Image 1 (tube, one colour):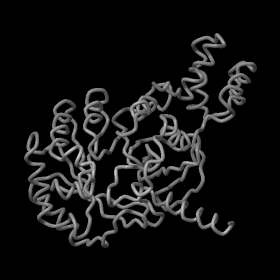
Image 2 (tube, one colour; image 1 turned 90 degrees about the horizontal axis):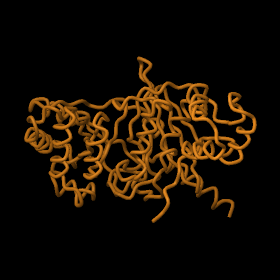
Image 3 (tube, rainbow, N blue to C red; image 1 turned 45 degrees about the horizontal axis):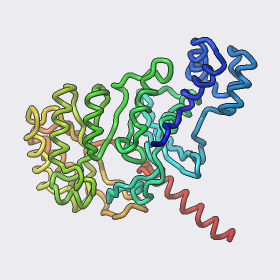
Image 4 (cartoon, rainbow, N blue to C red; image 1 turned 45 degrees about the vertical axis):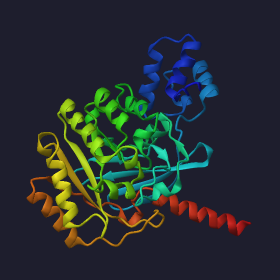
Amino acid sequence: MLQKQLTKYQQIEKVLKECQQPNYRMKQILHCIFKEKKTDFNEMSVLPKNLRDTLTTEIGTSLLTVEPLIEQKSQQVRKVLFNLSGDNRIETVNMTYQAGWESFCISSQCGCNLGCQFCATGKIGLRKNLTAEEITDQVLYFLLKGHQIDSISFMGMGEPLANPHFFEALDIFMNPDMFQLSPRRLSVSTIGVIPKIKRLTAEYPQVHLTFSLHSPFDEERSQLMPINKSFPLLKVMDTLDEHIKVTSKKVYIAYILLPDVNDSLTHAVALADLLRSRYKKGKLYHVNLIRYNPTFDAPRTFKQVDEKQVKLFYQTLISKGIKVTIRSQFGIEIDAACGQLYGNYEIKNKKTIQVND
């Protein structure tokens, strides 16, 4: 059995214990990181010099495990490509709303092996599951630069519930000595990993849950999202019903409109019928319609979105009594779709290598 890898925070506690330091030292260090925004032990003057030296020797000069490579900006969106150990890369998106609210869309895996046909990240394949600190350091990077952390969504690269370190990352975000986030400010999007949804329901009932559905028809969903063969749609819906019963919280349904594939009126009616057949007649389900954003490196490409069809789909759901929103589009001009900045970097890097060769 493989020994569990310690997070940097656990490593710090280990060093403190070995040095027979008082219990309050850990709180002092966390205060320096999360309040004073210091990640270099040498700058933590509250600590004795010999302890600073020991921590630097044992853990390093910088606590961040992610390194920014490329940053792209638009009016409301900032997208960063981070480098990780082992020459792996991930993307993080920071969205700023007109009211000043700052939201962060973070990655949980480098790549993904679940093969959704419309997703550029899936084309990469799974390179690695991020550690808990690689997940949380995406947000810590922005915190250290003075950003306010209002909400976090696990909707970046990868399937969060397929990562064994996901729940540990939730604990770090909610830790009162660290990010101090209420679970109500955390959202996780899944394509339907039933056992982990059940764990989320039991242990983290206040975390918001989004289910990526994308087709109300089982066979078609299996073609678009192969995971449907392992976790069929109706079994996932039963699990979501149980989540609603236990938590009394609404579940969001993400639905990417793929032109001439899943955006017909037949699909809209079937989606409405599916939700109305669920617990409390679907009143605690809320559909987020997402316009398909063309990606250059997804397994399949689809046509440009027809706005008339988007509105017709929306109106059909409304007429059936379904709560629905058309999601606003942010950052299209900087390739806001997951995996695009990564893919552009990879292509450019390969060309550079070929030229050098």
